[in-house]
Length: 348
Image (tube, rainbow, N blue to C red; front, side, top):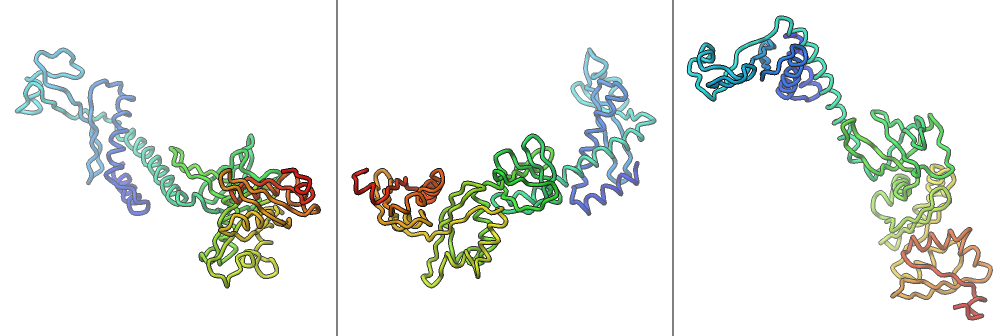
């Protein structure tokens, strides 16, 4: 094993950055277990590998005692001095007990340890590569699905999407390349565990940052995102520079930017509204595409009472209340919508 071991450790340190001394110590520790397993010894032993020659030696260790009560772990002072001239009671002495065929066992054990450490090092490198991606986008290929969990191939490792994280009715197919939002990256003994999502609101934000240079550069700011994945999303945007149209920047020339995002979301509807520091204006904008007649704000209850024309009531509320619900999520205000005729008849 000698030359092969030293050569392998040199290569590992140079190519993978695995410290030689750490590997030597790991192999020595594993060889102690291998010795006891193969030779049935209950005595204390130490295994040493010569760092220059690669030679492996096994040393029995016993404590000098008077009287000796257990010959497996103790030795008399007279016997000890045959090995160590100045040995006294209480000292630990050792002598070589390397079996004749221990070289073969040592080689096998060293190989196992090295393979294990290579795997650990590779897992560590993969974790370092992906750990900073939490909250970001990755592109992956759908691999397979098992019990509601979707496995995604990211190239160097595999990620998972738990039940509830795919967009409802999206129907991802094996072999399909899709963009995912990285929810979390955990470090485990089996390597990094990467959790993905297609329904997370963060996916919307990252897609806009990817498609809209003004958002990426900070000229246009995304203030809030409200999403019901697979159905509809509302996003509020704002630009400090009055000469910049934040909505126009997000829509892009001939709608190219928003079309690209909608395509990635498989047709999910997108409402882009202008953010405003005035809650009256903000709530009215958030109820787009409905036209709003008036908004009354109750700051104590954070409730917004909204009046719309009669023909805009159903549009303002939306299918199954979706438009009003998303507007409330987007603005942080409770939204109560009434038509002009309802207000005229005293419904409030």
